Length: 358
Image (tube, rainbow, N blue to C red):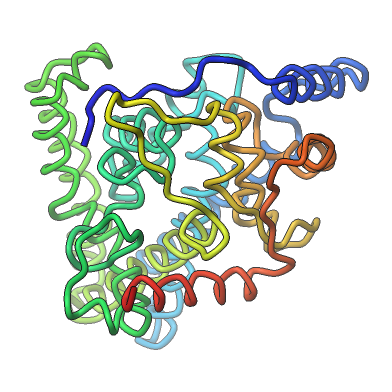
């Protein structure tokens, strides 16, 4: 794979018109591109789902089924923080104040992840090289899953449309126990830590610090307080599986479906399309309505708008999606969208099945 990948630098009229229309929308309506009162409320709501059940587990003498139910709720809270709060912070879209964004981004660390790795994997690699195999780590599941014809096919991939759903639930656990450590070492070798202005030693110390804090709060402290190690371990896995499954499926339905493309650069490392057009071809929306589901997942169902304007807070995506869709249609460009999340899951299932056999 070519390391220095470049996109066509010419800016088609589509880009100029789209930027102008979106900027005019915010200017004419006197709206900030960052958070609003609704976003602040959502932040506290998601944090409450994550923290309140945890406090109840520590302070009340509850039956085992209730404790497990509370751990499940915490899992949804973790997913909500990841999709609706942390995501905007680490994209510097939550606030105009970079310090606020930094602290909002730290919310990932109290959910078992690591903000530095996330920013490199997601902001630098995924958003720049969307769906380009070998560069976009968000679509690289190793040998377990095959998302593109350009990835090597294994015998087990014939069944990936069946077992993938279990693998998705392991996402956040993999962050906790192995992936973050492996990534940090890899990013250091590639010089990506240096580009973030941090040394490997400092980054590793920070990573270990946050992991120890997370394990203590999620496993050690509840066990010390309740004296029930078995229930807390079971609750931990329930929480992690729910969060991992929710995060994985929402993301994958936006990129790994039978509607999107997986383009490769030519021998000179050039991607034929303009970066904006590339985002339209490799990204898909779903369930574009003002529903509780859309609200809860942080506008990630408006993935096209997010990829074109990652520095705009997601609370605005529903409104600007009308502008993006209209402009794309005017220029005869793709605007992939499924009416519901279920239909998007079907597109993902179909793609898994095809990649397991093609």
